[in-house]
Length: 225
Image 1 (spheres, one colour):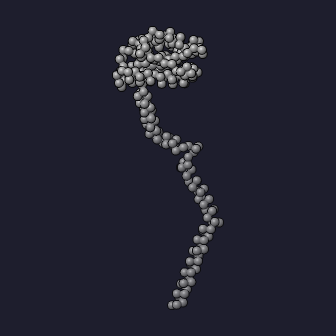
Image 2 (cartoon, one colour; image 1 turned 180 degrees about the vertical axis):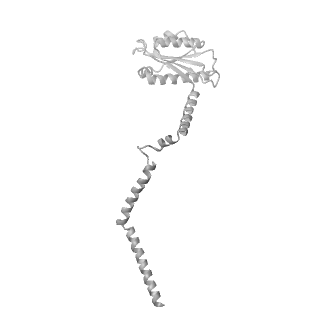
Image 3 (cartoon, helix red, strand yellow; image 1 turned 120 degrees about the horizontal axis):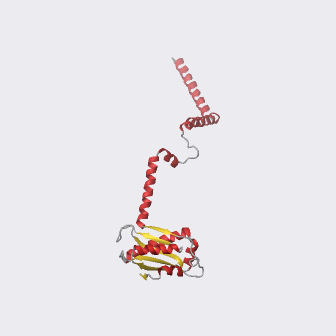
């Protein structure tokens, strides 16, 4: 009986030594590194056919657009609508500018700008002030993108501005046509219609900047506001 126990203990010791030897060999650098390299390449071989890795350096956003075109179009539409609403709050305008005649581009003469306000709309003083502000911002952006030299000359003159009145939209349109025929920059504000006037009403016309002589030839008969 004691002999059998001894034999069993010897077998257990041998088995334990065998397991320790196998584990040591498996965790040794000589065995571990080749296994990691083989595993890495096996992973590539499995993932590439599935398209698991991005091709051509495509970003996550481009992949989303390809697989979810409807959602992406919806997001773009919402952004576009938000931009339109923002512009609507400021009102809208149109502009026309062309090459200036010699008298308007005269370096020695003073440049001026005139704001023409419609009387028939009977706008309050605050409304007129806001519409003139829209007009000033509108013509400034037009000049900034198309006629920077003229804008700089006007600024160097101290940015002279005069506010006058006209009777109605018909007279406003005539003044604009005359200004455009001689090459003066113009900008017309169309109100959004939130207060006092109907939507789309042409409230203020800007003429200039241009030489004092060319602007006065069109606006000198108008009354100061």
